[in-house]
Length: 323
Image (spheres, rainbow, N blue to C red):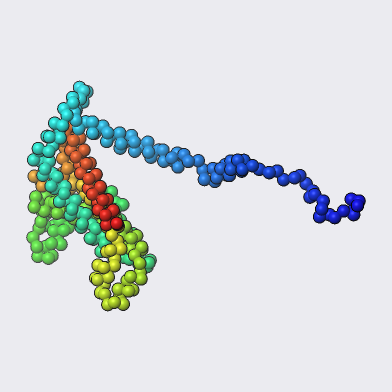
């Protein structure tokens, strides 16, 4: 049979024959494609490098130096002298430090639970999708973004102890006498606590609002059908659904309360008569005003250890509850 009479289907296809690619070559090509698509593994670290370097230089290295200084008698320009645990003994045996610890605990507990309770109430009131609610949420969140120095100065003006002060004028309308607020040892701690709650509650409110979106709406409908009141729905549906949110906010608020410094320093600086002295203001005075850097570093390390222990305990309790 001639080529002209041959079956076209039996002839080989025109063009170069396909080249077979081995398994190894195909795998390398796939890896190159995946590498181009996903980027290099070090690309995210390259973007994080500036922040990590700044944190290392201004945060972690000073922390290590503070731990070292807590075992030394710091003598600027003369050389430090190793004293072991004497600085810790001085701090723990100090009556002023024990009072500062007690004031810190009271202030931390009051601000933590006060801000969480107020933030939870605000979240329940502002839950929804209305545009007006969005504006109200933004307005309520303003205290968080305002610098603490500005907040402290505003509250200092409102706490003016004379009868024509802003808050005292309101008390006068209610038939109550003027209060000394931050100038009175009996009310200074409560006044600082109110300032901290006012500033911290909007932050907790936003976290609660985010957590409320994860609560199953079907549970509300079932509870309403069963005749549960609004308070019962909040107690038996909302609060259990926000258990993880409560634990996270408790950790954050407790750490914030134990490290309280700016509002106390700006409003009272530990006064009057040491009634609002907290650990951070005492450390500041020991280290920078009295030049006892080793003793101040020991107090800072103890505060860090207390914060770490509190965080670990809360995390262990969360794991136990989740099981």
